[in-house]
Length: 423
Image 1 (cartoon, rainbow, N blue to C red):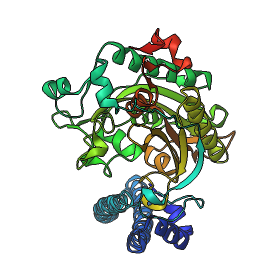
Image 2: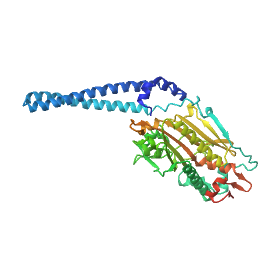
Image 3: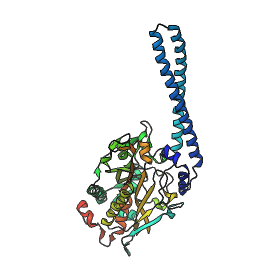
Image 4: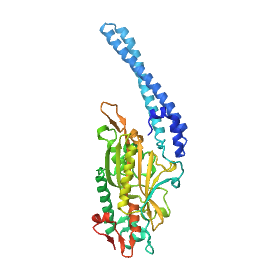
């Protein structure tokens, strides 16, 4: 959520930069400024009314002490009117605050100056391409056929138990899944991230805190009886650890990692791009999260991208790094880098990670602040990244490493799987 002070001070710049997202928010921004002025005027009147009421209350006390009860009672009736007016003003201010909040909830984050213009993912900027794309020759099956051939993943059984998008991992497929989770967590810990095992359901306040609500409400599974939401990513519960918290500047950056299943309705997804593991309703992911000082957040963002790249290097997968354009940028993000691996059997790039800097956008919702020595609390910056999402990593590993003898396991994973080939 954008800060009111920033909107007042940088109105034109905010409107102009949000055009990078192909949005014209001038009407909403002007409405917020008008409402904020009305709120400030109401607050001034409330302050004056309360001050007058307090002044008269003191006078009443003095008059009663002096035995001037009639005069005191006359003034007392006036204080009753002031108290009623104060109540009305408080209610008016609360309504205005709610109106401001509702508008701000609809305005996305301001893109970083480096975000390129564009409308769709086709306009994203390729920053780097790394690794060699293997030549599979005649061994070129898509992962859903390999999964069936080697008894690794049962998609039909998942449909029977739950529905499409909920696969069942079996045998070495389950072992590979667990191996990747442990590998990613271990690598994150080596990079200084502390592991957290968070809840898989969050309350409404947590959803609003990190910006999934109201923006992504239709994409989240909602447990209506308890008004809880299944998490779409570990980012939500881990970042919300620091909701309504003031941390010491000396603690920054705070680095957390966590493995969780993730749940997404993916409403409207269909076609070849969702086949097999390409798009699921339930999938596993290891997330990295940072709470950072504003002066360090973009340096830390680059380091997070480097961390994800190192994972892909160790998994021996060809990949590329994209800087997302304005039209493809997530609602809460100021700058996002996507990392994609190349699937030889499907002949296309598969997104496996998004690494984002939200600047103060989430922190303002969360009331997440840091305090230096003797300084007034300031909003922190929040960052997060997938390190990594498993489904498409598994898909690429199966497809890119198939041989006449079976599916080879990258050397970095062998100590976790306990086997070097799937036969």
